[in-house]
Amino acid sequence: MAQRKMTVFPTKNELSQAMAEYTANLSAKFIKEKGLFTVVLSGGDLIDWLCKLVQPPYIDSIEWSKWHVFWVDERVCAWEDPDSNYKLAMEGFLSKVPIPDKNIYAIDKHWAANGNAEHCAALYEECLKNLVKEKIIPISKKTGYPEFDLQLLGMGPDGHMASLFPNHPQINEKQKWVTHITDSPKPPPKRITFTLPVINSALYNLMAICDKAPAKSVAEIMKHNNLSLPSAHLSAQVENVWYLDQAAASEL
Ligand SMILES: O=C(O)[C@H](O)[C@@H](O)[C@H](O)[C@H](O)COP(=O)(O)O
Image 1 (cartoon, rainbow, N blue to C red):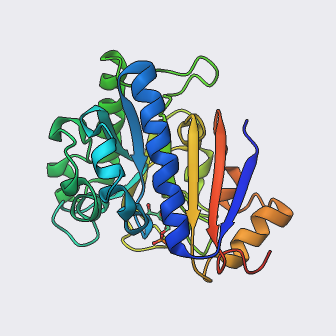
Image 2: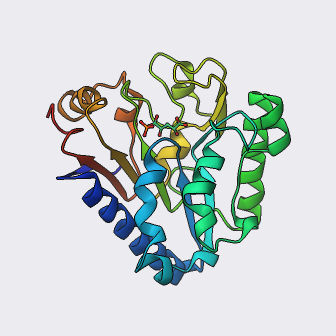
Image 3: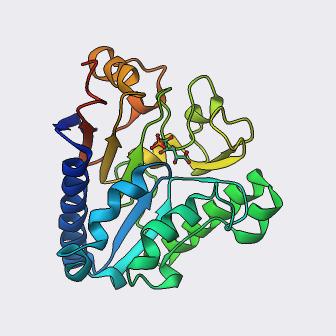
């Protein structure tokens, strides 16, 4: 299990720059090694911080056609809904880069619009299993779970990551790869989410946190390893990187 490696950046802009560089380097490495790159996105402010990737030099240097894009969690609503992580990522990032549509693995459109969280989670898991068969996603020999190359995560002020919230049972799920929640404390209430073993089976995890609101939870994790906060459980097979801006690191 990889130890947390924390870097504090003076500004969000520098954090955003470093995220782009980290992502671009891994993209080049994996595409060279195996001809494709699997990237898992979350929602929230993260998409804004990915803005540097759609600017030079990255926009031209990254082999976008080799990317395969997933979501670590998704809100169960129509794709057009302002709450949708898919919509957010499409508008802010994915529509600006030439990733083939077939390589973008969104929540099931029909069942998400219908609000059926349980079925959406089952269908997303089935989608991952099909991609294992197609050899897009390997199963890790070490963990026994699917192994994504890079996962980009954010943390809420309550210490949640993906849609694994404090005092909710989803954090303990070990059988499923994708589970659901219908009473999320952060709106909207219905979501699907990767389970913790899948999150931690990624080769590289990058947790990006900005602003004052999550600062107390950041300190609880860094100073006290408070495991009641789901983000304290984050690990990775190779690197578990935490990028903070100064406000998020202000209680350390
Ligand atoms: O769907 C979601 O809500 C996100 O995937 C969620 O897990 C997010 O990453 C954190 O809540 C941080 O969100 P902010 O960056 O908006 O604080």
